[in-house]
Amino acid sequence: SGIATDEVAGLTIASHVALRAGRPEDGARLAGAAQREATESKVTNIALAVLRIPDPAVSAVAVLGDRTDALVAEGRAMTRDDALALGREIAAPQESLDPD
Image 1 (spheres, rainbow, N blue to C red):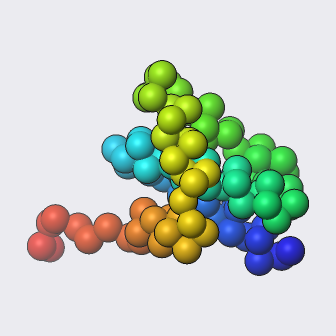
Image 2 (image 1 turned 90 degrees about the horizontal axis):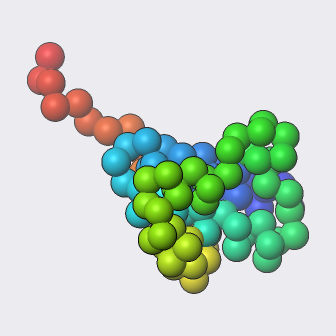
């Protein structure tokens, strides 16, 4: 369950990164994917429970309003592999537009 714990925390962090990086829809989807992974693997979301990071599904409401629930549901319906791929894409360092 250590791997599952890491994946749930990683999806949660990636969700917050997406919310702050102008990709709130993906942030809500990743929040849903993290919820599903935690439920299916029966692990505690360490990011929420221990680190006390706010639940990104709740944070998404401030940006997305009524659209949040549907997007979180989309995330719950994502495959594990698709959710992890999206999380890696969002967490990857962005190339600078400044050539210097």
